[in-house]
Length: 450
Image (cartoon, rainbow, N blue to C red; front, side, top):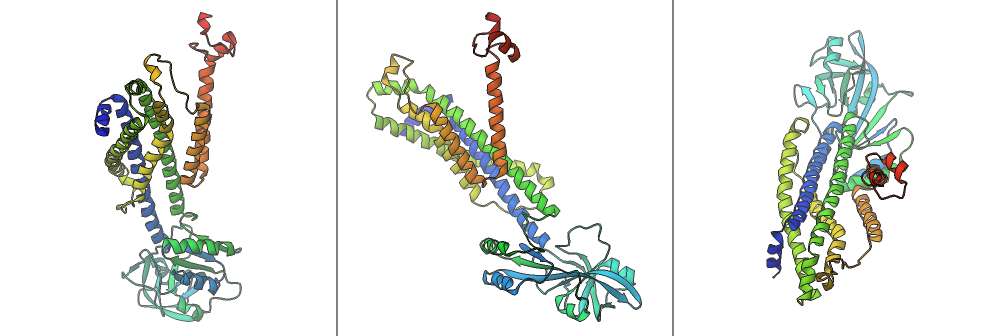
């Protein structure tokens, strides 16, 4: 009986509009969510390569060993770096070098490009920038004096994963092992040092360590992640997240508006049918079973069609954005599917609850009197309550982002402006200034007919 009712209603344009609105809502949320999830994963993976770790602790003095022990207790891997400036010598030729001393775990992520390939700064050896070798007239295999010690040049350092881009760097790079720093004697009282500690691990231990270490940071210490990084990658990550957040908000708001209009139109078109069925003896329970079954069937078909359409939209967006996206993006997780289906269900429930409630409350008297309309949940109460629920759900979904409140404020201001313009036009007057001047604020009659 439910399927026969559904098939009969399916052939009417009103129900098709409801199905189409829900399908588009699922497709847009799924496509946008999948692209956002894949881009976030791809950027996160690349960020680890550019930072050579998941987190970085930057300090002007050595970090407390208790901090590092706590990180290891959480299951995080730790790598140390020390940067300073010192003089290097080849015979009698001096040259100021930017020294970076690293441990054996460097780099935790990314690729250290060297010549010959695959080298790392081992104890007793260094990797020098080609410019440093040219200034000192040295080649691979020669010795270089760094402070009080002499080290062998094992190769050239071409690119560091966490080197970044600094066109104002005047001193060439010298990469050495952290075990050789004390031998150089370059660390003296008053030396300008920069300690960096790289951390890597799973998301949950990193989140716990984030909340543990941040309250303990002092002046001269900074905890760096991709989100708060000041480099180009961090800014790109923030802008991409803001763009995707704005797109998600607009998609959800448009989906809510489309489903609300479609459901209200469909339910109004079925008042007469329900009134006739009640006149013929249909019980309230039977009508509830038919309408709820039809509603679930529409949701099922919208979920299937919207998922297929969303996959197609995602592929089309990937093709369009191919020039600006990484070569390969990781696969999306299950969350975009869950958000899309959940958004469809919540939207249909919020905006369709009152229209379906009015449909169920249709009086049999409507067969004789078309103006017999049930009074259920007045709009002056229903609309503010639904608006508050929608805003609360969006705030929960978006984490109370400032962009959410800015967008909602813009929507409210636009709605008020349009309402003011529509009211001030005074029916069919071309100029609303003319309407106010000739018709008065309370007039509802066209100026030309007055």
